[in-house]
Amino acid sequence: MHVLEMNHVEKSFNEQNVLRDISLSVKEGEILSVIGPSGSGKSTLLRCATMLEQMDKGELFYLGEKAAWNGNDGTTVYAKKEKLKEIQKNYGLVFQNFNLFPHMTVLNNIIDAPIHVQKRSREDAVKEAKELLQKMGLADKADAYPCQLSGGQCQRVAIARALALNPKILFFDEPTSALDPELTGEVLKVIKSLADLHIAMVIVTHEMAFARDISDRVIFMAEGVIVEEGTPDEVFASNNVRTQNFLGRYGDIL
Amino acid sequence: MAFTKILTQLAGGMWVSIQIFLVTLIFSLPLGLLVSFGRMSKNRVIEAIVKFYISVMRGTPLMLQLMVVYFGPYYLFGVKVGNGYRLWAAFIGFVINYAAYFAEIYRSGIQSMPAGQYEAAKLLGYSKNQTFFRIIFPQVVKRILPSVTNEVITLVKDTSLAFTISVLEMFAVAKALASSQTSLIPFVAAGLFYYVFNLVVAMLMEYIEKRMNYYQ
Image 1: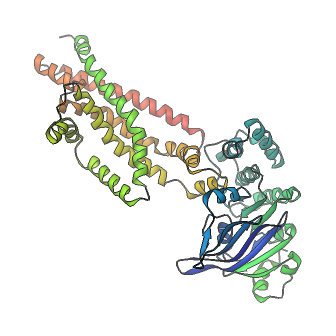
Image 2 (image 1 turned 120 degrees about the vertical axis):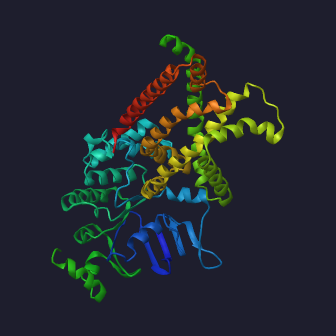
Image 3 (image 1 turned 180 degrees about the horizontal axis):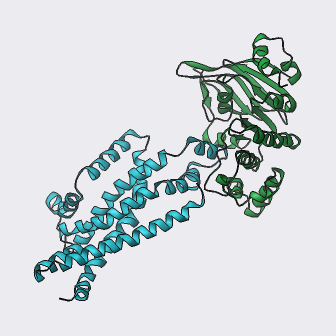
């Protein structure tokens, strides 16, 4: 079964079509990278998938559950609030600029939602959070505040925070765009290490080498449409002119 | 007349001033939050009503508002109020006036919060209430603290306005003493009282601000 399925998604801002007839699906444990030039609609796609943005048209399913579909007038209708809350538990999002809660310690950032949203015991949540921090290489930062951390460390905390809710699928919105090359490396390493957790991941990124290495599948987007979709080898060796044009600039570093 | 004797005579007035100060803070701070919700309401009618309320509270003298609250029940509705209503009228007048100011301070703080905090909370499954009270409000408090300090210090001095409806607070007592003794010393004592009061308030607020400095 597909963890995520989006069909014929359309979205426009002020008459400008940002997403045009986008369809994609993600299988359990699959890693999908979305690449493309700035302004191609990648981030909007993630924001529609995570329901931070409402689609104009199209369908959205998580694990076969209907989150949104086309109503009689052809525009998107969303499921009831309670149903959406239920569906929302399936996914998490790692933001470009982290969006950690600055007034909470690293540990509290991670355990607050498990305790207050999922109603898990504090003991249990702390135990898991400590394990996650260990995995992120931040075991000694549990009591630090986000402002005391580097950007790379903040992003790793944000990843731990998202993982603490045990999502089936995790979205990354340009997770390293706000970081310098050195910090980018440590975050990418952590994301790679998640591959064996068998959580599906959808990663919007400008790190081409990373996308090629980690992905099961790559989508190349431009001007609001999916230009090309396939295995990393297929997309990166594509004959499509638009794809070649975009990747050409990365050719030297690959 | 000895200075200490003046102080003892002023003591009763001081207590009334402190009462007005405390009651105003205790009630107007939460009420202001409620008013700010109304001000930011998506319901246009609620928003318009609250906006009008705030503009009246900020656009007319507090002195006048106190008189309306005190004399209003009789002159508008013919309700006879006893002498005991005086202090209550002061409480009510101050609370509804300060709630309007605090509401605007809350609003500025809440609207300055980056959208990313709401989005992160939504993705983590927080309810609207949880998002506000666990994520947004604690950060708003830190942001608005300097403006609140300003307002609280103004309140200390504003308590003297209660004398317009003959509440025997500090300033009214000092005035009475000054004319009966034909001396300006009671005013000096009164000035000293407000200054020390505000010194304590400023120290307290500074302490709270420092306590909130655990993050940037």
